[in-house]
Length: 104
Image (tube, rainbow, N blue to C red; front, side):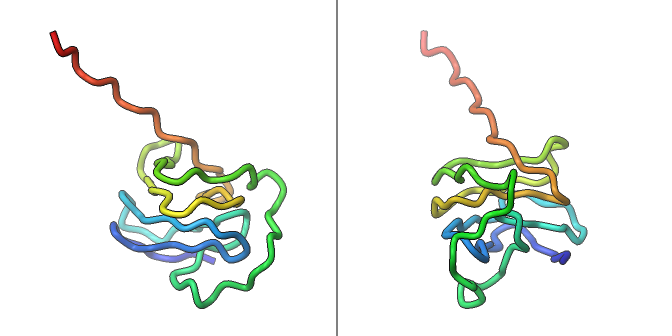
């Protein structure tokens, strides 16, 4: 299921407690999943349970940013959960922290 999201949109895992905010996205429909299940735009749509698809588990960490390989999609985790985000089946990776400038 493809959805169109914009920066600031909230995403919810269907079967996990993972919650994300869209930081950056292309202007196109995306096949976004959380834990291997389609991402939801409302927490009320959750089905419950902890059924995470193989390869889409391991947990999303609160406060961490997740990006695709091209850097066109960036999501911020606001509530940790077992399911990790993916776009078109590609699991998003943790964004590397930028080094701080020298203070001397």
